[in-house]
Length: 150
Ligand code: HEC
Image (cartoon, rainbow, N blue to C red; front, side, top):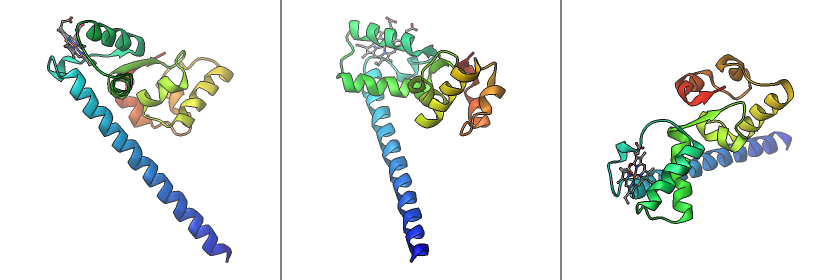
């Protein structure tokens, strides 16, 4: 019965997407908890503020490690992910897809499409240009405009 098969396929797809989203958000919660556990152990978490590039955050964390911050490599990777989602800036004309995805809050596939368009057509000139890529939400871009440089 083809109809039933399509229905089952659709349902499986939906459930798969829902569980992937669930996994992403529970992993985000672990990231957040780790960030608080490590970065609020000496000072208030609100001290972790201001926008920096990925490299600058890496330097900042290395500085914290020098003065006594302790954690595993995985925990610091979680801290970096929180910072990537919230306080990291990217240059959209030089960043790679891995760096772009969390800052813009787009899927890896959309981030790859952003890089491909840049490589085929040249640099982005502004947010309007970027908003043309399918999967990029204009409102999300607007909310992140201070974190996107060209
Ligand atoms: C061992 C204690 C300790 C831990 C753990 C720690 N910090 Fe700090 N942090 C400090 C101290 C002390 C200062 C203020 C003096 C300074 O800037 O060197 C500071 C200051 C800062 C500043 C402000 C610096 C500036 O230039 O304005 C940032 C940002 C920061 N920490 C981020 C973090 C992050 C992110 C983490 C988690 C990875 C973290 N800290 C964990 C001790 C710590």
